Structure formats: C-alpha cells, structure tokens
Amino acid sequence: MGKGGENGECEKPVALYSWEEIQKHNVKTDQWLVIERKVYNISEWVRRHPGGARVIGHYAGEDATDPFRAFHPDYQFVQKFLKPLLIGELAPEEPSQDRDKNAQQIEDFRALRKTAEDMALFNGDPVFFSLYLGHILLLEVLAWFTLWYFGTGLISTMITIILLTTSQAQAGWLQHDFGHLSVFKKSSWNHVVHKFVIGHLKGASANWWNHRHFQHHAKPNIFRKDPDVNMLHVFVLGDTQPIEYGKKKLKYLPYNYQHEYFFLIGPPLLIPIYFTIQIIKTMIDRRDWVDLIWSFSYYIRYFYTFVPFYGVLGSLVFLNTIRFFESHWFVWVTQMNHIAMEIDKEKYRDWLSCQLAATCNIEQSFFNDWFSGHLNFQIEHHLFPTMPRHNYHKIAPLVKSLCSKYGVNYEEKPMLKAFKDIVTSLKKSGDLWLDAYLHK
Image (cartoon, rainbow, N blue to C red):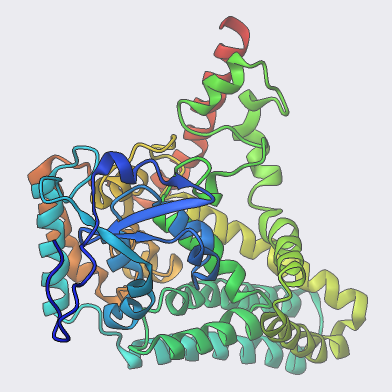
C-alpha cells in the first residue's frame, strides 16, 4: 500500500524487483541497473550520458554502485540526472550484490574508499599540476630555442625531437589527469583544461578520449567492452581468444609470430596512423566542432612554429617522426600494466576483483613515476580513477592490505620485466592459437 501524502493523496507504491528480473534488462534497447539498491531504467537516457552510452551500458543488468562512485566525484550533482530514471528498488529479501559476489569484501572496499575521502586523498595539489604543466611548456620552448639558436643541423634536430617527444608524452599523461576529473574540484574546470591540454597541446579530441578510455576503466580487459583489447584481428590476446580463433581456423595473420610483428605494427603505428585517423574521423562523424577547433589550434601553432625551419613537407615529416617515438613510449607504458594480465569475456566480478584481475603495478621510483605519468600505480588508479596521481602512494599500502585479506592478487614488478612480459604474453597467446589451429 502507498503512504498518505500531506495533501491526503496516496503516493504510488514503490516497485520492488528481483535480481533475476533486473538481469533480463541488459540489451542495447532495454537497460536497467542498480545503484545503492535503487533500480534505474536508463534505456532512453543512455544516449545522453556525458561519458558515452557504452560505458554506462556495460553495467546494464548489474549492480553499478562502485563504478558510479568511482567515476563521479560529485554525487549530489549526478543525483538530479538519476532521479527521473528511478523505477523502483531491490526487494527486501534480495542481497545488495548481484551474482553471489562477496558482500563483506565489497563493504570493506567501500570502507577503504571512505577512508581515502577522510584522508583528503581526492583533493588535487595545484602546485604539483602547475609545475607539471610548466615543465611541459618549458620543453616546448626549449625545442623552439634549440632550432632558433643552433639551426636545423642533424644534432640540433635530434635534440629537438627528443624534447618534443618528451613534451608530447608528458602532455598525454597530464590530459589523462584532467580527463579523469582528478585535478580541480569542479568538473567543468577539469573539462575546459582537458580540452586545452589534449586539443591545443596534442591535437587530439577530449570527447574521443573520454568515450574510449572510460570503457576501458569500466570493464578492463573484457572482450567487447574494453576497446583497448579490440585488436581487429591483428592480435589474439589472453588464453581463451587464441583457442577460439584456432578452433575456427581463423588466420587473419600468422599469430604464432605476433610477438615479433608487434614491434613492426604496434608501437610504431598506433599514434601516427591508427589514432590520428580515428580521432579526426570521430570528430567529423560526431560533428564535434569544439574539439575540432581545439585540435586545429594545435596544428596551426605547430606549423607556424616549424615551417620557417623545415618548410611544409619537412614539418610534416618532423611531426610524424615525433609521433613515431611518442607512440613507442605510449604503447609500452600503457600495455605493461594490462596485456600480461587476464583478458577474457565478462565474468561479472565485483569492482575490486575486476580491476585487480586486469591490472598490475610497476615498482615505484622517481623515474618510473615521471616516465609513466604515475601509471606505475595502475591498480590504485583503476580503483580510484578520480584520485589525483600524487596520492596513489598514500593509498597503496591500504589497498595491498585489503587484497591480502581476501586473497586478491596484487601484482607488482620491475618496469623492464613488465616490458618483457608484454612480448612473453603475446608469444604465449600465439602458441595457444597455433596449437588449436593445428590440432583442435
């Protein structure tokens, strides 16, 4: 029965749902999810989701409480979008967790997040990020000064390439901070500076990055949900996909040699070819004129700076040489944390288990922190994506303790071993494919 309102009218009874019913609504045109035991129908609204339709759709039919908290630093602001989508609650006899997840582990992780909030670990340090931006701009100025003062000889050109490759890589890590809303308390400020860093300093698109990268965080290393493991038949990854390809006699490429051709078509081509084409195509297809203008501002600035030194054709070659080296830096750093970990189909794990299965850390040092943009703390970053990177080392011991309590594997390794594991894992998957292709 409904409760009587102040005007004497009866309020509509709250609809109660079972997990069995909620899990039926997990297709593109019919999507429900649960946040803090409340059931929301996002089927129509999903297309207006600021983070993209796919990232929220990946949790259709599931409990999305922890990813909701992970991605949205301002809960109260987001509530106004959720309220019209509310259709009911979990029935009282239903557990808060779906699919027999460990309730105590989930509660302990949420308590850990509350501890991090109480420790003010989600507050960014403006001095840290100002200095970080300053060192990127300094590298840009030094690159121009090197050519202006020393000319365009071989040595000065090589020095300039090193300076600009470094500035581009570091700008990539900095845009990552703003994209995750981890610098300013106001999301709008993060969004504006994000467009400046990724657009004006790098010539890319903030919206393209957000829609792609948030999916990776929501469901890391899960086929059909994480775009970073969508290899378009170029590579086979993990332990199950190679066997499936082998059994089906799929041989788009000789996968037993993928650990070798990785060096030819992976790091060298990702940014100069694949990402560049995808970014421009995405901005045009989506009519994302704001990001397109920011991107053009980079190219205008770049050619205005370097055409006087190298001419138009020479500047194009110079630009792609920088992106060639940056691409190596980017690929090795971003893959060292994930590609050697579990890569498989959806297993519907809780937030902690899902992230730890797909993620490992690299040992801390000043160089590792700087070289990887603190992505050597990938575990902490995945668990708390809106946490400023300079605080990862503070929460890491608590994360380790929680993982130890529940037997969740917390893997940490030296950087060179992590690089080696990329190649080793590709070879292992390629061998699994060959065995299945020949014998199954």
